[in-house]
Length: 320
Ligand SMILES: Nc1ncnc2c1ncn2[C@@H]1O[C@H](COP(=O)(O)OP(=O)(O)OP(=O)(O)O)[C@@H](O)[C@H]1O
Ligand SMILES: [Mg+2]
Image 1 (cartoon, rainbow, N blue to C red):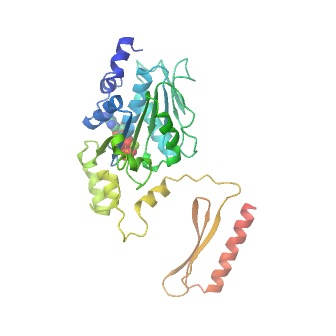
Image 2 (image 1 turned 60 degrees about the vertical axis):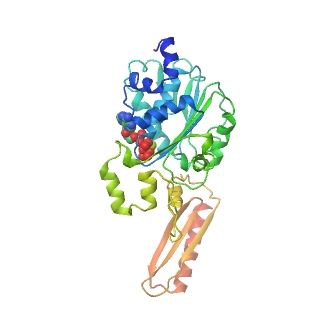
Image 3 (image 1 turned 180 degrees about the horizontal axis):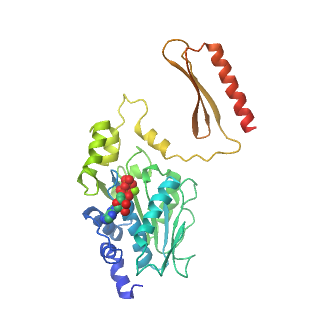
């Protein structure tokens, strides 16, 4: 493990820690983000895809674990996939096979802890689908890591704000800027003086391939919201002539659906077309999930009413 002298040095030099200990080569933007954690309490990063945000977060977790006594590092992201398959896997990737760290830092499915101190010296993965994900952590040295922060609900952030009133607590949040409101949006807009903020355009990152940029341009155009969010790292504009704006689509993708035995909401919807080339479409919603039931061309309204009754009975039978 590291000597006391090394720990004191690396506590203020995360870039050198990442280079010397994790054997990684952060690019200039990643270096600035790491250094920001030393100088600032709150750091917020918005960018397009693939510039290396989750890697910086993973490095930050390992750095903080190794250079602060008895730290607690709650980590979260909007979905299980983003949290476990991406962020948590990224921590494992950079710690794995590291001769200096492997015997001391223990990585498990949900926790990274210092050997012998599993209850007091750890980073933990908490999914943001439960409101109390980041609640109840107390320690002199706290680091909150929030990945894909645009998709995290404001209520998840509330306990973080409380904790940040103490000087030893820090926050690093990163994401593609998909939503036009909320904690992450505010950190780059009306509250930006309180943060150390970074905006990284994918076109300026060596990590982002030219093919990816060109594919998005070919598919959506350079003035599209998809290009803005996924490549340029800018918040969407949401023009008036767009029927379903991108933030709604993104929010839908980030919503996890856990079926309940007895759903709280069941709605049936029908777009009636009758005759012509248009389709009659019947769909239904159970809690967060919307599904199609039938699509029919040239169907008279009595048959459509019949279909809706059948669907109603089916749902009553299914959830009784
Ligand atoms: N400096 C680096 N050296 C080597 N590999 C890196 C570096 N930075 C990032 N990577 C790797 O590049 C890949 C993409 O990076 P990462 O997932 O961190 O990007 P991201 O900005 O989080 O992307 P997204 O916007 O999709 O969430 C990952 O496999 C990561 O480990
Ligand atoms: Mg990422």
